[in-house]
Length: 395
Image 1 (cartoon, rainbow, N blue to C red):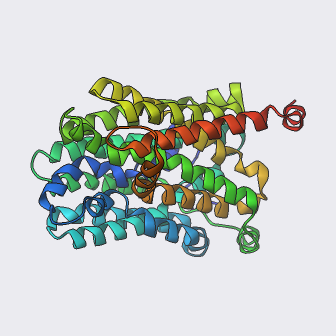
Image 2 (cartoon, rainbow, N blue to C red):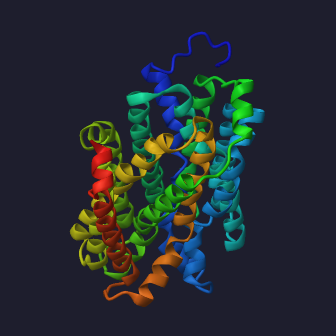
Image 3 (cartoon, rainbow, N blue to C red):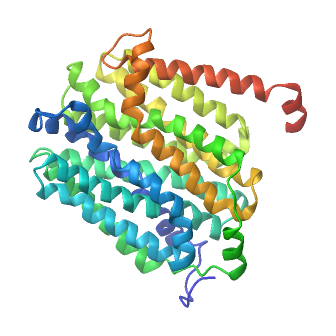
């Protein structure tokens, strides 16, 4: 399975860390959001929505490339594809530090997205290949914790560099090169067997995968609301500046991180009701964020939102194995992450659209409408779970 690195043991702490380390960088696209208010001043002749896309446009190529990442890994090797993906992310991530044209910045972000697409689902596939049972659930929970840790690190670095200029803030993505070097030195190549390759060729899309992807996409809209819209909420309500927003987002990522580490124990205790807990956090958190008028309320709101994905999202990724053939794991991970990337990419547009129908006030009333819809979804899921058929099945 692995190459001739005889000292490789996925059960050891060091090797676990470098498998998980890939997840430090795969959701870092929105970590640059503290620079958006300053960029909007620089590019004031362009629509605000266009400038905000600097934090989200990378998700568009990401979800396209995601569809082919499993096949690329099967053909060329999972380590090689992950490594190339992180290399593209590092180069394209830092590139805007040297650019002053908005269109070139957006181009760099598109290339950054290609790297995300090559890396994202394979970070989960690596865990599925080396771990199973409760060990797999624990690693998936820790993986979801590593994502906000990476965002936190890059977000803090971006906030510090922002004091120099918005261009300098992109130097924060140099952190990706650190992760790349460690991963490449420690993790060996995984050699797929002929049976695994043949099985992956026969895999077809199924409804459990599609609905799970739609669910994940809906959930990540809320995550993107925090990462992309927090700076504008802070500035519009005179709570502070980009640095303040960076601090609030950092607290949010710490909350996500803690919940990710706790997922294994929480899932063991509450099973499928973890899904409802995550949805409830998302609904209540976004409603509170919509009405927040000071830094303290906003911080509490985003921390509550931060609990949502490590609970509900990780639950979906951990249990999809029970609803599909084993050989469909790679495809399922890719499609679920496509849903996540679509939700992130179009979150600003979705919030803007929901604002048209929202009964709430605030800088972005669509945030409140989104929260209300999530609470309705929570009630529907709860009623389905306690229904007679599901009640008998859960015993």
